[in-house]
Image (cartoon, rainbow, N blue to C red; front, side, top):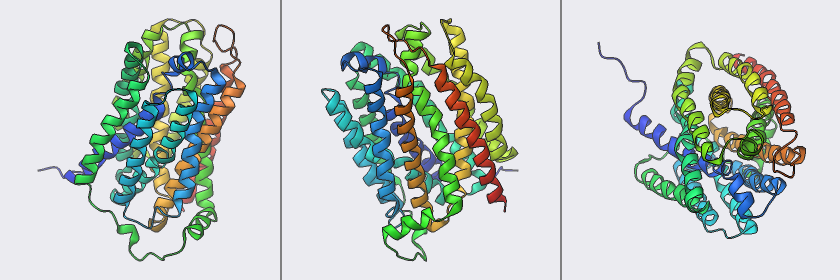
Length: 403
């Protein structure tokens, strides 16, 4: 008996093309993490200035998401996706040609204005096209973009920086984005189902309506704490591993590659598992498993490369299970006509939380004269607290969805 396919050919294409969209957007942010040591040396900046550089993208993304919320459900999602992706490409090119700290800071802010809302638009498309019962699997594939950025993008970024300059990484991202933009323009179908039976109210009223919904506010609170950990730890992982743990800069590529490979392998598994045993249950399991790895990682002293590879990869993999399941749960909350606005505001909350986390961690960290950090473990404690708060908040979200 011939097995019925879960996804149509077009749906498979859409998953692939949106995964590449996420790959380029994630890589545009994530590439700063391993390039931290190069940028700090080349631009003559300290950890605090680097934190501002990281947070500028996130804060700009957060502001633009709020501004976009009132418009996102008023137009064809395909058109919005293309316009925003085009702006992101321009911002990435500006990052590539930046010549000093100030120009790069402005370029990062411009890229954030467009890149920050890409996830919200993509998730709105996914929610319109795919049923909730298979969304865990879809999110599992989309999560592979994060893994792909570590397997392909981050090692290449480090290679380019070592070989020539950190500028090349942004040219690389822009090139992939342009190719993907052409495919989107040529093959993606219009998506206007959310416009049917829609009451046309102004964008301010739309935004206010979103913030009056208690379930939406609960979701935004969960997203706020969900984003804290990654933005606190990851921007400073490269200098921490080099100056605290004693890892050679040339070995950073291997560490990020293995973490990405682990995530790439397990993301589809987590996606299928979340659809079978329950998304919230897997979220709790992933959260509890992440705690010991986070605490061990942030307390590392001089260690062997093999040990660091295991701890960093395991931490990254279990954290990815939380991102897959939480994303799938959040897609079930908004109504059809408010989906785009909800996703954009949710993305904004995530970006603003990340920007604040990067600034807070820069303020908490104490940088020694040898460029090592004397209190990196504090970031681990803060991350664990935010992780536990997420579990509590998602419990109430799941209970609301069950009702």
